[in-house]
Image (cartoon, rainbow, N blue to C red):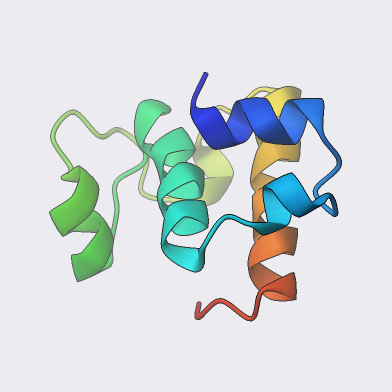
Length: 87
């Protein structure tokens, strides 16, 4: 499990430990979950960072994530909003 996902599983997102993550790291951890599940990225930034080799899903709604992964993504997105991260 990636470092942020582990931290989010151990701590509430509102703890100082989770809040200390900068926007770029939150973005990377969130998108790493999607990459591992086979998402085909559309943005130039994500394609540069993760590539699309072996991707299977063009629509985020089709990406097969477990309930835990979906909760982690939601926690990361909430923290991104709270930190005022660019979308």
